[in-house]
Length: 367
Image (tube, rainbow, N blue to C red; front, top):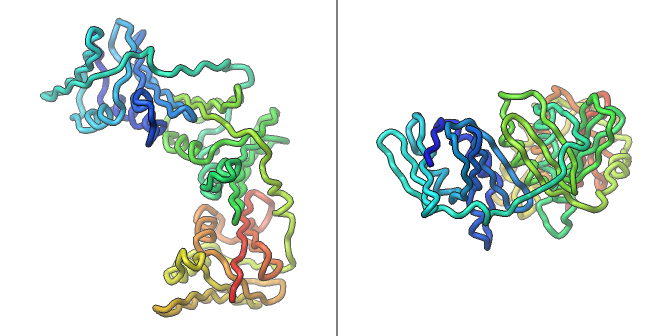
């Protein structure tokens, strides 16, 4: 059976579904991509059983077939082909796929399609439509803060919450919290915990081109998102998310106003002497209109001065420079507010007005 398609479209589709190919697996079939061809369409499907990505492209083929092709080899071959149309010739008798493009010809041994795990869910019950760009923004501004430690599995996920006309995403680990919210025209309430690693993989295939909206649905403890020619199905976490709002409400009486870019660049320079061994420690000496940022080790010391407006008391506090840089790097506003209580309580970064975002960072105890 011969299938004709664009090399660029096939290459992009393979890149998309490859985000759900497992890095390590005991099942050889999961290292492959399920290919379905029918009605001049080719659907590529890959899964690690926690995330499934499907991408559809246009092809020229009047027949119907299904097979599983080894993912990494197929993707590597297509990526190296010239920018011309490809002919895929699948032999149903010996399960071999021949790939021809210009003067190149390759052959791959495939598996039968009925050996691949099928996921069947009842979609279309409670679909809502959200801005693709806004979902990407939520992921970018919060998912980095989710825990990477599987001991507390819930914290490796991000909370997505829609209620009262706003959509908020929250990422938490034992040392920091990131929240970001936007206004949405949606009356349906949603509260779901999505694995941060998998939602990050999804964001990578959300192009700025294509549809503005994506469809979003929760079915059978799974999140299903469809956009452009892709459909992503992610297993969600069951359980209770941490009471982050209680932690964010514990504010102090020291509020400093500072230019985000000045603070970020000073933190980047001061962190040159910070290390993982001392929890990326940098020291803040907060005074009335100046904040001194210092770091030192056996190689030397660095001191930075940043202009601020402080309406509270002076304070000395230790901060993890990596966590601070992570938060400052995703904020767009020119100026920010940072709230402190004392040297052993978290600091909270927020906008000058409103509560569009909050970034909480636990301090580091200093000797």
